[in-house]
Length: 330
Ligand SMILES: Cc1cc2nc3c(=O)[nH]c(=O)nc-3n(C[C@H](O)[C@H](O)[C@H](O)COP(=O)(O)O)c2cc1C
Image 1: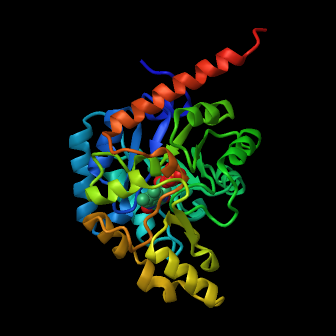
Image 2: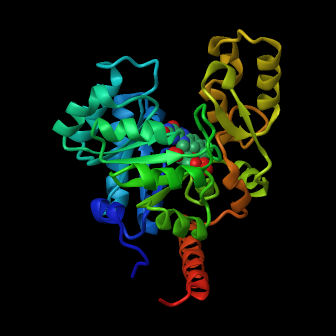
């Protein structure tokens, strides 16, 4: 039984209109299997497996764990990668491994669209603003995810909230779109669908999933954090990150304030991904940019992913009932 049927559930063959977005260092086979088991679709994060053999092995492991339930791969097309390098190669590798849906992010997908179509991949492109969603629509992606200022990770430079994004996307887009950024409650899923979305993409809300391969102390810190415990850094290098407020976000903010000409290279000793990875492994959350968003306010306890998703379903049902209660019959 399911509550909703949308372009997303139809196209991907999933029970509920929700995606478990790519998570650097955390988006592995166990994550996508937990998502599949919960009735949604998750993405293995290709960038977490820089070695081709490791990525191929992870996809194979996910296939064993997921059985016939679908999962995808996230490809963050980072600006430092030039077209024709690993990004293109990754798309071919993924398609060869039998993957049919990719979550792309990080830059305009236009140069890759002919290849992506050729490979028969369903492209869900993630953008931090409706203006980029329109561009992605124009170059032929299948769907867009629009993440608002509230999101964990990269909210972009515009910093427009998800509520406005959803209304604008509903007005301006013709392809199916998903809303992300601060989503962690079933009432938000209902609101997004009411505003024309075909679903939502979750990140922060899933950081307390039992199946996530992160240290218990990290999950406890996430469960204990509130919506006020994030910090924005890296705006001065046009690479805004929303992450858990800690020693690193304070130090980076100080360096950005003191030096208006600061570069990513200057900040790298503090923000390198390896430091974040260590935090997931050791549970010491004081160091590293540990992506997390305002949905921390909705993320209060560690639980199996199926329970988290089931709770969102119950909340969605309650939201629909509230709507029924206030609607004046025609
Ligand atoms: C810990 C963490 C790591 C993330 N890593 C990636 C990534 O590597 N690539 C990507 O496209 N998005 C990444 N995201 C973004 C999520 O896929 C998703 O779009 C976002 O978390 C949704 O907003 P929310 O955090 O408010 O739920 C990450 C988010 C988090 C919280």
